[in-house]
Length: 407
Picture 1 (tube, rainbow, N blue to C red):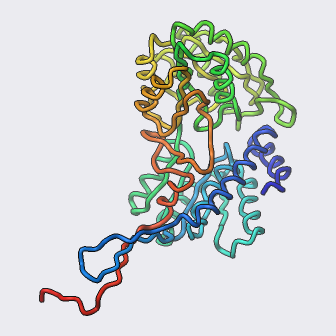
Picture 2: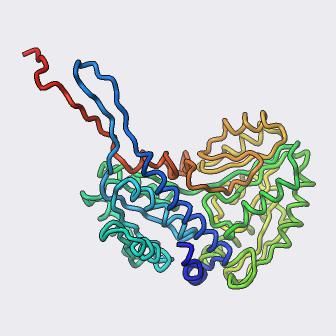
């Protein structure tokens, strides 16, 4: 896959407006996902369980579930396209990858590469479709008796529909959905380190990542200093044509850019302050920080999925925890504090599937259990955790044919 960096980069720039750096990172992490999946083939294990019946060997065994349907989004197309199929294949299943309508060429290239690498005919199947046909196609795929597992990465709105369809047909589903990741900055935090994490977590891929930092929750005691440092750094981030050397490229389409305008206008009207950015040129939106955000503003609760980020000021660590959990989502979170005991206490009470202490909300490794709670979905991608998602656990016995029966 690494030999296809140039081809993948060209497609990602053309189809979704990604920067070259984001495309290269996609290829690198996707390669790691394939390597990790290959390593997991020797971890699909069973166990011998002591039986109450004399002369019986009782075993729990994991076996391939069957055909697995993966539905991948456009925002990290190589990472999430590969993730949708790698572990299902490693577990012995064949897969269907329903490509995103926004980046069909990028997703199709994944299938071409894996076929060139030697997968037998029929193991990986890439399906592309017109946007207007997507609901009927997804419903037909989930309903088909050969499809035994479903995994979906995308919006909560669509994920809810897929979960309902899977439940109707009694098909287990792994859903990784939207997020509103909080980055909590406590009063004893290393502010420069926290600013670095906020910049990276907020603006990588223009904020179009499910675990992007959406809410920067800052203790009042250090809020002015932190906000000034963050605004100064944010204002220096170059935005422009993704073919150039820029940090922020294009948003996926004009509707996404117009939503940024709406969030900014709503926050300003209700008393917030734009401390950095706030402008756009077509689908190129400047890195933007909105300070003094409160619960009356749309950006407090709506997932922006773009480079417009909020600062919410709180009175103490307990208030920070309350605000962080005040959301329908629960994917990723992060806490900055030099008191690890305090940070760990907050981390244990955060309603998220992922939490990083003194690191950004944005992080991914192939071997880690990745997924959320609440309206961010359920189930886990990554490493050993995903073996459970794509196999059936069976009970098999070898018994004494001459055993005694009561009648």
